[in-house]
Image 1 (tube, one colour):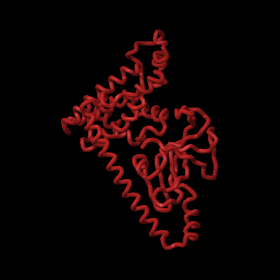
Image 2 (cartoon, one colour):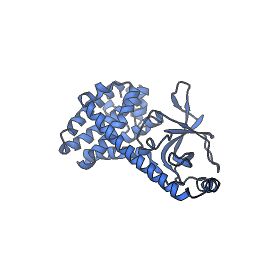
Image 3 (cartoon, helix red, strand yellow):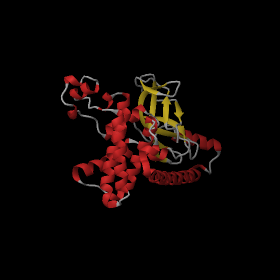
Image 4 (tube, one colour):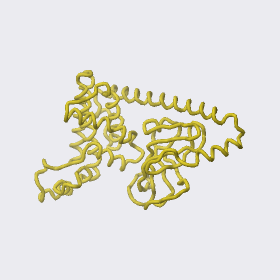
Length: 308
């Protein structure tokens, strides 16, 4: 449960994962398995650096005792039960709102690939690159938070890392641009023949309510047509200090977006493409009671634009 030990372990597992990846498809089962372990250890390094209790299974009392410095009252340290990859991701994402560029849904293929190899020797090598790239994009911001030098972590594989991430980002940007072009064309077909006054009346009616629903929705300007679109996602209570640091409390409500939809032009995008769809925010503060609210009126939203 030592943060430095976990960081070192993550680096070694990632080095082994990249070495297997460059060997070709016959070694990609090792690559995705080792990458999954490396990612889990790095996430736990961040959590353990805050407090070791953040990486243990809260249902296991002996593990809690070890994590709080009371291990003399517990069983052997080797029997400590910690959280898995997905739970580690969820905890880190909650502590670093707006800084983790992938969603839980994006992470699941990596977790499934690692578990499939570990438990059943099953892995789809055709998905290796996509799975591996998710891992790299998750690791990068955590390394930054931990102030770990990228050169020391990626070593001789840094150039490969850069190319894989660049390729994935380029593919996402192309997909996002295609969606924007299609949405603008559809908007023109639907409303180009109307007078401005007539169009405003119609748009006010069709964009007043969200078309997608999750934990909460908030209105934002559509990057394709300029109409009112809706960001949907999950909400949590957090507070932002003057120095930009986030803490979890009950002072403000933060919407973590998972999707966007505009009824006017049918522009729609999930977590992967949100960052590429114009100037949509990474997260939104809602002007609402953090103890929970039910309101027929759209919540007032203030976007947070993080590093892209």
